Each structure stands twice: as C-alpha cells, then as structure tokens.
Image 1 (tube, helix red, strand yellow):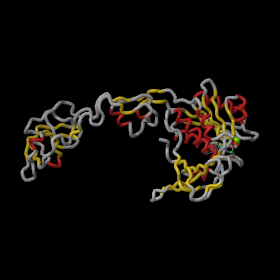
Image 2: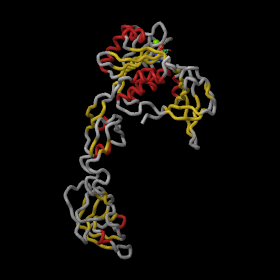
Image 3: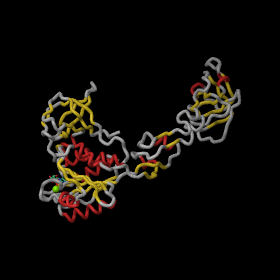
Image 4: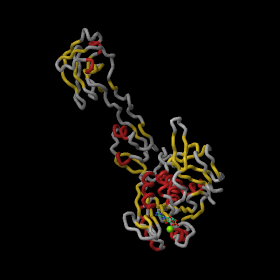
Length: 408
Ligand code: AMP
Ligand code: MG
C-alpha cells in the first residue's frame, strides 16, 4: 500500500503554477502575484493634514493658552481634494481639513478642538509642537519601494496599498478551473424526487464547495451513470475546459466501478490503495494533450471529503502558486480514546476546543462511518493518527488538522 505522503507526491509530480494573467484588482483577491509591485510615487504622495483644524506657523501659537488665546485671521479654507497650491503667511491661518494638502509656509496644524472653530478669525487656546498633525509625503511608502512581492497573495488587507500605488490591474497566477464529475447509477440531482435506492449527489456539491474554498473556480458536469461510454463522454467534455478534473465514486473493487474500468485502460491514471482510513482506493494521473491532472476520489462522502483535503486542496494551491498547500496541523489533547486500523493513517472527525487556559482539546464527533454526512457536518477538525497507532488514549497529544483554517 502506498503512504499518504507518497500519494500526495504523485498527485503533485510535475505540477507547476498556472500561467500569469492581468486581472482587475478586485478579481485578484486570493490569487498569487506573479511579479513584484513597485510604488511609482510615495504614500502619502504629498504632505497633508491628519486633523481638521488650522494650518499655521507653530511659532505664532507657541504662547497660546486658555487665559491668553492667540487670535489669527483665517484667510480661507483648504479642503481634502483641493489641488491648487496654497500658502500661509506668518501671523495668519488657513482652515484645513483632514487629508488636505499642507499649504506652503505652514509647519503645523492646530486641531479644531484647541480653538473656537472661527471662520474669519480663530482663537487658539493651546500651543502645538512644530510639525504636529502633518502626515509627511513618503512616511508610509517611499517611491520605488516594493509594496508586494511576487508570490504574495492579494488579500483584502493588501488591496488598499495596491490600489493606492495605481494598480487597476495586477499580474497574477491564473485561477484554476476544477470540474467535478460524480459517478453512480444511484445518484439524483439535489431538489429532484428520490425513489427507493436512490440518493442525492451530495459529493458533487461538496467537492465544488471544497474546490472553491481552496481558491479554484469550480463547477459540476451532470453526474455520469455507471456506464463506460457515458463516463467517457462526460469526461471528454470536462477535459475541454478543466485545469483539474475531480471524480467521485467508481474506483473501488465493485462490479460497476466505471471510473476505474475506463481510466485504467488508458494507462494514464494510476489506481492504488493508499494506507489511509477513510479513503483507501485512490487514483491520480494526467489526461489528454494538455496533461490535465485528474484525481479520482472514492464515493463515500467522508472518504471523498478527507481525500480532497489530502490531495486536491494541495494540487489546487500548487496551481495557484501558493506556498502552503495544506491546512495547518497542530497538536491537541485527545478527550476520548480512539481505535485505529493498523497500518493505515486514520482521519477522525472531531471537534476542536480551545479552553480559557489556552489548551487545545479535541473530541471525536458524529460516528466514524465513511457515509455519515450528518457527522461530517458536526466536525471542525480531523484527528490524524499515524499508521503505527492502533489506539490513542484520552490525554494523548495528537495531531489535529483544523478544517476551519486555510493554509496561509
Ligand atoms: P463507490 O465509490 O462508487 O463504490 O461509492 C461508495 C459509496 O458512496 C456508495 O454508498 C455510494 O452510494 C456513495 N456515493 C457515491 N457517489 C456519491 C455521491 N456523489 N454523493 C453521495 N454519495 C455517493
Ligand atoms: Mg459507485
């Protein structure tokens, strides 16, 4: 049997980030920059006021106090967005708003709170340190600075600086398209009536949701029945547009395991047993002229889910040019014992709690059958028990894959 690590290495073998494209800034959230972004101008671009107040010469107001205010004539206003140049002569003031460019001559802003707010004349009741309340040009970012590097991900935290340095478009690694094909004669599209023996194609929905959560765009084909030609037709349509094909079902030892039957003939997909539970039957390969990666997942919903986390999320993230490929695994204290099959890496659905004491504790949840979608919904973590462990005890420190956290 192949180890989980070896199967992941097979899935990722030869996979490189997709080509770079220019996309509109907001469409680039979650995508990886393909080149450095340099600030062509400083941020701020000009000295400006950080307060609503009065632009003055600091020396004029050095002696101001509530008992003996300094009164200055106000010769006009400078609002944010004022593009003309203004100047303040000694012994005068301009009313200035937050973000407005500093007038020539003025070295300080007196916040309106230290004045009577006058429009024609202002009475200033406290001195201000020279240079106070001015945001200097370049104090945030100097012109020529690399504000984001190739390999950095565009996020809701970095779009502001990218926009501020003029990036209407950014050069990013293209978002991969994942096409999900569910297989099985028993499947019915959600929302349609079920006859005895039929089930909803929940994997198709789940795998699309997972692929999107990994950063891909994703959609489903109509599900394929367990008929070789039908699967072939659906697959060839999928291959026209997909950067990754993910199938569910039809890869084990049963009589109607169409995915395996069709794709093992081609020789391009390797069907193996992986030493994991759930999800032992796996397949991976590359198809067609474009060498599109395909990962064939087992049909049991929890097996499909776990296998997506183990193999497809890393694959999508490699195509996206991301550095971290898998969700983080961290230690936690186990609250209940777990039996684990010898020789298989087990993934146990669990709930992770972080106590007020900061200690991370984990409790198995929801029954561990590979078919339990209700139980899957209760879990927010997977306890990972290595192949050599056959029983983990309450109080043991175990590795836990946190399903609520994305890789960084
Ligand atoms: P298979 O891998 O095709 O042998 O399917 C294993 C189990 O998973 C069977 O109980 C199937 O009914 C179930 N299954 C297969 N495909 C899906 C699907 N798309 N959604 C939900 N359950 C499925
Ligand atoms: Mg099947």
